[in-house]
Length: 112
Image 1 (cartoon, rainbow, N blue to C red):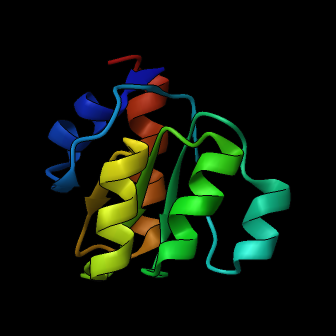
Image 2 (cartoon, rainbow, N blue to C red):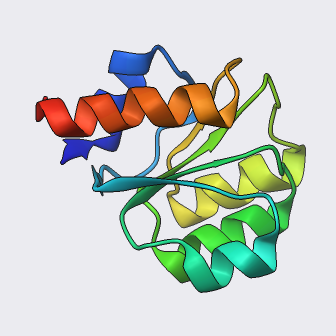
């Protein structure tokens, strides 16, 4: 496990919203929101290119540790506002989901 803040620092993620500090227990990659609703585990670092307000709703529903917008995607105004209201950690990366997933897996296995 690693805190979402430590994850962001270790990976050099852009912080759009600091959000509540939570422990990251795993990673999840998904862009189809209905699929993520049924499959993402609580406590995951969710990587997606989706950047609309519905992402925040799914994050709350699944109790994710943080959302990481990948491939340089920036949150739209509604997503950022909802992340602030819901206290969701919202980060960004220029890397793709696969590359970031491998790095997250290594961090989690190292126990940092």
